[in-house]
Image 1 (cartoon, rainbow, N blue to C red):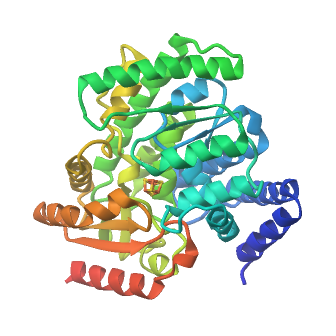
Image 2: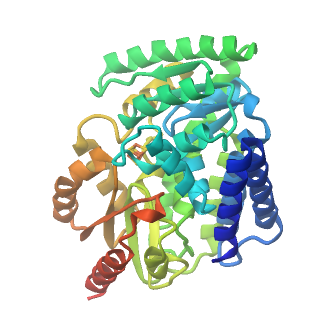
Length: 419
Ligand code: SF4
């Protein structure tokens, strides 16, 4: 048993004795990890990715340090409003990943299933709900979520509102990508402003919000430039950096820190050597915990993951004269909203930007829309010239298993790309 595995067991035991003890142990462990990112960053990573690892750890610690100044959010919530309300985004998917990385997800999943959640529900949701049920995660000030792009959100977030007994706000984004949908979401975002002002007792100033949303646009534009310019360059990659970048591109969008990260990425490219090995564009979440996946992609020159769709679901081409309309446009035009062709076409465009040699479509267990679209996606990517692997697995729940199959399928796919 390695040290992190032992840590997970200690967290679970402590939480069983007393929720506050469990929270204390979890927070202490993450604080130590945060110090390690600061003083002993991963030497193989470039400076931008070292900065990102710390940025993400800080974002995870903020709700543990000040839960009453935090709002539980789903990944595609427009967090500019949450930040302007002075709240930290307390993100469900990311928290579940960190619990999994700390080997503490199994007890949470079990608690959620014991409470009646189906074993076919996505493990990100079950992990967070279980952690809320057993008191490992603290009570937030409020909850803000959206149905983009996940139907499971409707169940999970209303359940979380009951568990934590806090007010919640849902942004209902219609599936049709039309101006009328943008108007409907714009109205809801004005209501969200009023909700957050009432919940926190703090006013949100539209001028400050407009500057923040303009920064979001600049950041997305620069990230698009980065993705295009990294084609044919070698940037050492691990399995978590694309996930971190997917998280911060959503929950920290509009912050100066996220803008700094993207500028650092561009600076790193100035000295990056030419491309080495095969490059993979990854669709959906990444099983960062899987040894089989690490064997092929963890700082390997033979093959790297050079982009993940979740960091590129929002284009930078949204209007900014009215920040509410801009955020609404971004939500409605999210690549994962509407018919599946929108998601697939965005993936093909982004895979072309980075000159990917192949694509992996990851069928995360429990993610119905990803599983349901996989065959159509494979055909479309292949017709666009990208050999595409459909890989089954679970991004969060290690008990899902299937390591042997993951290794065989990834190995055969990379061999095929080399041939
Ligand atoms: S993996 Fe799928 S089901 Fe799970 S949170 Fe993401 S979109 Fe929802």
